[in-house]
Length: 97
Image (cartoon, rainbow, N blue to C red):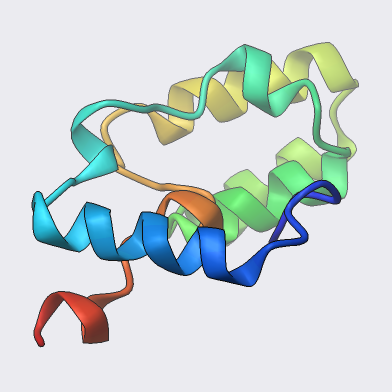
C-alpha cells in the first residue's frame, strides 16, 4: 500500500536501497499502535490481524466489535508480532543482493 502523495517511484527505490545498505529493520522501531489502527476501517484492522497471523476467531470478533473496542483489542493482539505495513517492509530480494 502506497500513500497518495508517494508519486516518485525513484524516491521510494532510493529509500529501499538505503534501508538495505544500513540493514534497517523497522520491526525494531515501529509497532501498530492505536494511533495507526484508528486510521483504518474495521475491515482494514481485520486484514492487518489476518496478515499478522492472528487466529481467525479473533479476526471475526474484531470485525463485529465497535471501532473503539476493535482498535484496543487489535493493539493487544499485534503486540510483539512484528507486523509492518507494506511501505515499512524491507524487500527481502533486495536484501539478499
